[in-house]
Image 1: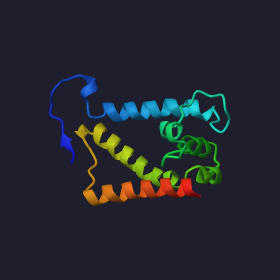
Image 2: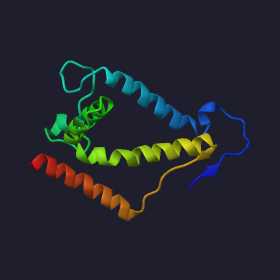
Image 3: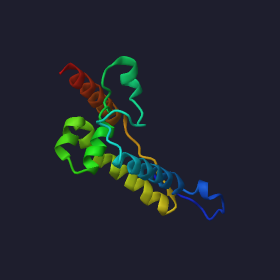
Image 4: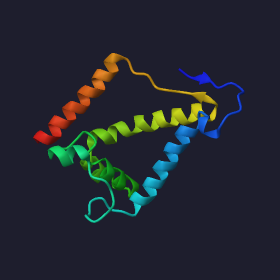
Length: 136
């Protein structure tokens, strides 16, 4: 899964750590803005969910921005109410980001792979969560 980059001298943007470092930098910049911007209140520059804008329904990730804001401010109960499934999935996403960063910093490219069954389970959970949160 990880392949070592040889001793080629190339652009820093081609280094295996460039992409994960850019994602972390963008995440930190977005988090800094979000920390001071309450998404529960109107009048901010945070984007709307395009799925909700078009359909009026909540997507599987709706509430993720509010959940992140609540977590950053230590409100675990409010984060749970914003999006339970996304909150439970967050440690796995952070573990994947950490592994990607680790491999990149060690000069290896890494891409997680999921078999068909895992893909079906994730898709099934997302569809089920969407139906449940919109039905109740």
